[in-house]
Amino acid sequence: MLGAVDIVTIHTPLNADSRDLIDARRIGLMQPHVYLINAARGGIVDEGALVDALEAGRLAGAGLDVWAHEPMIDPRLLALPNVVMLPHMGSATLEGRMASGERVIQNIRMWADGHRPPDQVLDGWI
Image (tube, rainbow, N blue to C red):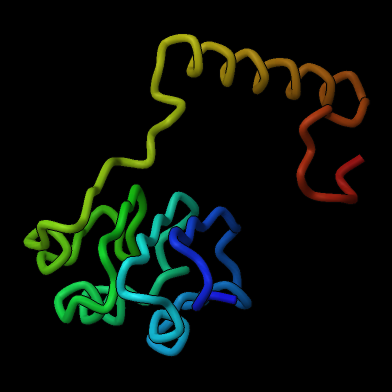
């Protein structure tokens, strides 16, 4: 399947199953015209394998807004002209931050009143 795509875009949580999900073997399945975009979590892409593929022309480019050792960035990634890097901050608007804060307050109030918070992630807390 990876050999038949033009763009690989990653949007998955980082866990034991997804760590280094995109490794040298999987990158090797991609064609040289492919662009890889990681908008999920650092650690899902093996950065060493990614750098090797980009430097060797085995991938056309990468778009990253996360990296493996945040906030440190592998200097080899910074040096590559076919890599675009942005901070993982899509919610960094006044409206986004206000809405997030309001949701937190709403969840705390629901929990304090003995109800299940609407955005509860972990089971078993009420």
